[in-house]
Length: 496
Image 1 (cartoon, rainbow, N blue to C red):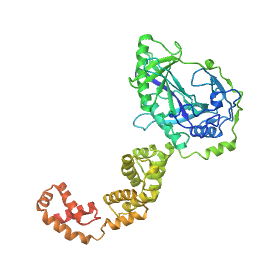
Image 2 (tube, one colour):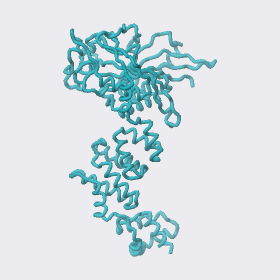
Image 3 (cartoon, rainbow, N blue to C red):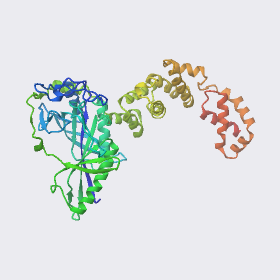
């Protein structure tokens, strides 16, 4: 390889709290009524004093523990000075030299195959309050810029990785796995379109030299990426751009300061914005209005008790416990905690995890997509679906009949509540139970063979695949008959 991509990510996550980080002002996404979710603390009015939101701190600690971070027993708040319209106080309340957590880790796939793993180290996780939102006229006609402070003061968790990712693919997988973990933990809705999850990528290259050494190019921080696919595309583009730049100038790390570049999703290119500020530019100092926070063993124990089984561990357990393929386990886990909970309840009710996974990944997800439903809105409870699958697993009905019952249950659910007892009622009412008395097959098979002499001749001549229409004719007359068993009996009768 001519060069190695080196990527570190800074992820900002808005926490799901009722109020903001240092005030009692309501915390919710509200683009329709700008500047209505503010108060004297948010506006930085004289005499207003901040008070830390305990719930925000607990959610932050829950996240840090899930990332295996070391939790500081003493942490403080700092003022990060900068003057911009989205911050009326003239500073952001953040954490500088004593963040509440450091030195964590998150494991991700190294490549598309997924067999090898990469350990991404987490440098730190810290809390800060969010800024407002600037809206500029980008038409070039000199229109006014506007400021909406509804988002200002929102609890913001910054998760900073070490530069351990060596490809744009790994950066995307890191973000996908992190987002999934945050959703399982219930700390954020991670909606990128609403700005509750944002990401900046620090990218540079290690360029190989003839003597085996490597030269590191200057680091560029990329902003304005509103999807994981855009993060991947931006990193790939920036890597190519930096390599071409290095071939022209030979600039290496230290020759120029770190720069901030934007990402233009329409043109699929990065573009320069400004030189990156250093810590000294922000003139950090301890916030005099906020007391430090101490963390006790009791608090850590309480927070740990609320951490659910995380996606990576649950994915591996599903593979081992229910004998699922990596693909099926991934599909179920990646749909979110509620769907994974639903699957597990179905698997236990039916007694067959593999069959439960088949029905989930095929029938349930298809119906959810067609109807535009989340699993919480799906009309069939896990007990109903588990009961239906149990009848298939117990050979009371065939898979084909099971799908007929599934469709009937969904249809009935549109007009009334359905219950597990409806499964057996529909099986009996429609005569779908597998026929165990094989004596009923004889006359029907004899009649079907007599009416289809040409097909019988073809099968006897070696065209066994021609038997399909005969199976259908027998199944039509004997409801609940197992197609596999019909085929066996037909071949036996034709061979006599």
